[in-house]
Image (cartoon, rainbow over all chains, first blue to last red; front, side, top):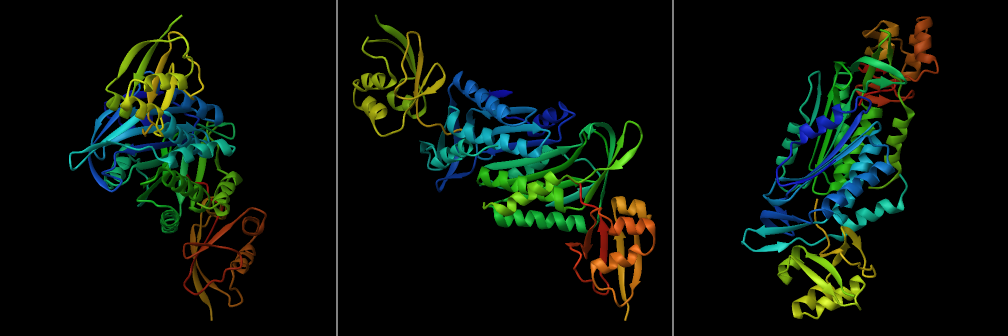
Length: 153
Length: 153
Length: 87
Length: 87
């Protein structure tokens, strides 16, 4: 399931729903991303997330489908927030449930690595000086994605 | 932090506490294990978890310390339940927080793999027939642990 | 025959070009993303800088990421944006 | 001189041996886990089966996992249990 929303989300509730939906699975792995209070050495007071309505949802859907094809996964949930956020606000939640913990760990990390380099979201941050700037893409995120293309399972 | 307890735990609350404790971290990875309703082809009605008071806590502490030494981790929480559980009850929670998502994923999975083969817990399950049996250790759990001894980072 | 497309710009591109979206009738000689970029670059300094400079610009056709060689069809939705930074 | 140790059994071992814990004065010739197992195995059928059979039995001294060659000291807490199955 994919959700792109301005509202915050309830991590505990989402994990519980995926867990209870499947009595035959034992493992639920989740990733929560929060806005950091610092970036590139500057204190951050605000972060705005822009997205590409229509394409963003489709890109996330494609990433989740790829993960489900590649590993033995019961379900995947992706929630990504847009709009104005403050330090320590939650940005993103990815949950993968599976009968096997190794599969759930891989699928969840795979989704995050692909989301970071393929899903159309852009961050603009405001510093304590009042100046704002677009966050630069990190090539470590590209590297993280490419890792999955070179190794099996 | 290590907790071995009969009571259930609140995953959302625990994740939030680790997350909010560190304004400079962006990534929180968690694993929740639940009692499956089937094992070895038999429907399960109950599960009892025994442990070795004193040694169990020490073993979990040692695993968390090892993970913190090996990766750039802000904090690790391990909660493991003991006593009588039912299908779909939560058994175990592991949370790792870090500035880098890759480190948090690795530390969380490492803790689970080591917990599964080094922490003194034993499961006894009751089947629908009323018969009970000790759960056999899986050598896939040993394999999962050994994996970490052979690869760097 | 002209192709009619819908164009979208996002993030730094939207801000610098001061365009969020536009409808465009493309001259017949334009059929690839690269040709479209070169065509838009002729609008002036900021356009040339943003679309033809070393700044990485990503393109999508109908919500799919594509490269410079991808061909555009009549009625397509084309988008230009910087490398993504979500998550 | 006798060594006094405290012994613990867990899970399947506790159940089969019908012992949870005991205090033991060890004969002087016993100094390793393997020797302790052989000594306990002499108690009879079930003991021999559980401690000397192909069933994997793990041992801990003072809360640390050890192997058969580990040596026991006076006052130690020694435990025997099956492979663990938590998580």
